[in-house]
Amino acid sequence: MAKIFIVDDVEDNIKLLWYNLEDDGHEVMSASSGQECLDKVLAFNPDVILLDMMMPGMSGSETLAQLKKIETIENTPVIMVSANDGDDSVIETLDLGAHDFISKPFIYPVLEARVRSAVRLKQSQDELAAANQTLATIASTDSLTECFNRRHFFELCNVEFSKAKRHLRPLSVIMLDADKFKAINDNYGHAMGDEALKVIAEVCKACIRESDILARLGGEEFAICCPESTCDGATRIAERIRLAVEKRTISLNGKSTQFTLSLGVTEFTGAETQFDQLVNRADRLLYQAKEQGRNCVISGI
Ligand SMILES: [Mg+2]
Figure 1 (cartoon, rainbow, N blue to C red):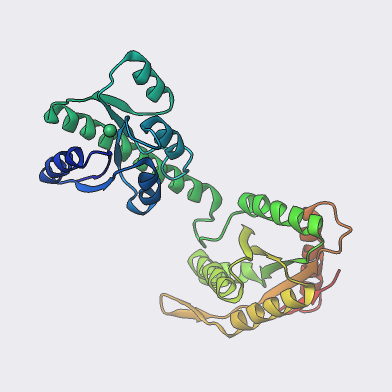
Figure 2: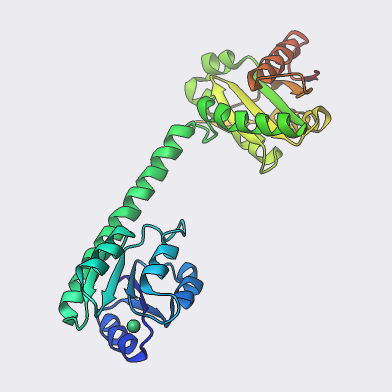
């Protein structure tokens, strides 16, 4: 079953198609003008549009041109329906992006076959779009923790850094690292180490805001970029994360352990020209936290 949108200024034409298409199991919606089509199309989100060429007011070609400007509709196949099958109108509408053209009077089974062909096209386009989305997610995500990976973190943060620099807005960076992580792996096995990494991700996600950007940069090291946050605000987030991890017990196969984090926090001062400079400074502060006995937050600029 597909969703078919009929656009025609003649009520009887709509009725005839509507009954036939519904009999074939499709979900149908109609509009009696180009404007009504544009008003209804987003809410209905059709798989195929059957668009009459000759309509008073906005013509079929004009309506088609407008439909092609709507981002979520531009790939929806449009079949033009017209009593005028002159070469010029066929060429014009195909050039405008119509998927197919059928002349009136049409034989219904032929129209239905063309609708099926358009539906197949739409379905393969949707599958391709979904597959591309999956690939994009895989390419940007760390599979163990489902945080962003290093590459995607820098892509997103460079954009945020440019905005902060242009508008002189606050932006802070938190770097964090699990303390004595090697000991967890050595004493309890790598699966327990993985548990610890998942707990870090889970705790960070619970402590940050929707607009903050969390990533696993590699190994047991994570970074958070906090747009519109001062160093004080980001330090409070860092402290919440530190406390939450300190309280957690991780368990696997009947064994349990606890671990802590060291964190470094810094803020954009207006003088930095690259986002990396903030990451490097937060990293130095993180190492100061390690030197000062671990399980603490050091912030500075
Ligand atoms: Mg008409």
